[in-house]
Length: 206
Image (cartoon, rainbow, N blue to C red; front, side, top):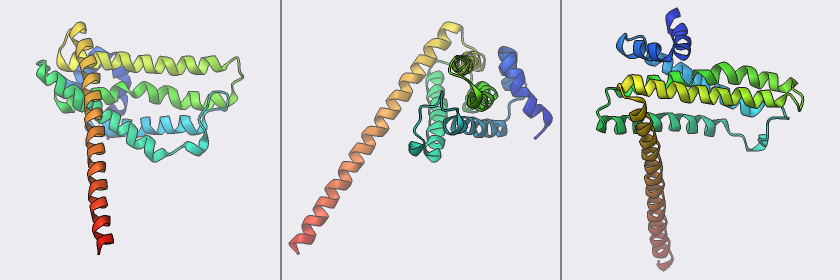
């Protein structure tokens, strides 16, 4: 990887409209950076769950499962990217699936920059200072949301209003996909149970 590959995400989060424009139209965005950002984001969220100070960490360590976290984060990332591509294709968006993935990944960079240090610092905070931990984490999420809006606008060349509508439709599309997946899983499970019940009945009849 080149030095610019690492510095460009920092440029994007500070100058989002110029950054996302350069990402798409100047070919400065790289898919290999998408993979690296996802790895670091997954690491940041797992690191926070496992090592945040006891004053701000309400998660029972016995329930932690890093593999589940990895699957959930990757599923959410690709579900958003696919749903956004599907919705924006119908609404004459100019973004390719590759562009959507890069814009989504670059929008997550604030989580990396903020979650790692706040998790470390949380182990030394007092009860009164814990509010700063929540404030910084909330700022990271708001920053990510703002970047995602800017990225969607720039990649698809939408207005602000159309961007917000398409993002809402993307969430609805994602919810429909999840519902259909759960429905298919339920039907598949019922089919397995039905086949198994027939098999056991035949076995007992013999």
